[in-house]
Image (spheres, rainbow, N blue to C red):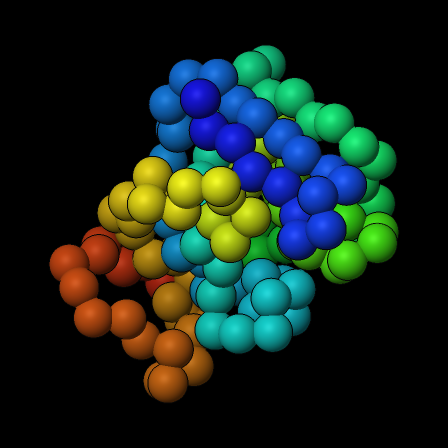
Length: 133
């Protein structure tokens, strides 16, 4: 079980099963949404994802060129999860909202072409300039 929620506790989510992927996305949309160099996200199957509470959403053009739907708490503003059109059967959980962020084990940094120099992470991540194949 993967679970998390917002800072004020009004919106909670849980996901059954394992993460499909764990990445750090550096696309300009993620930078603007997070206010930093990139967003750590985990992809989970939409079919096993459940939400309690009433999150707000914002639709923007993602790094893929398709719509990225970001869900956040309308009370405290916490960024919670996304529903990118490019992968419609997947929910992307923003790692900062996890109850236990240690479950995040990234293996890829994507859209590194958009990453500012100060946003480089040390480590052994595979890096790609756009989305992975």
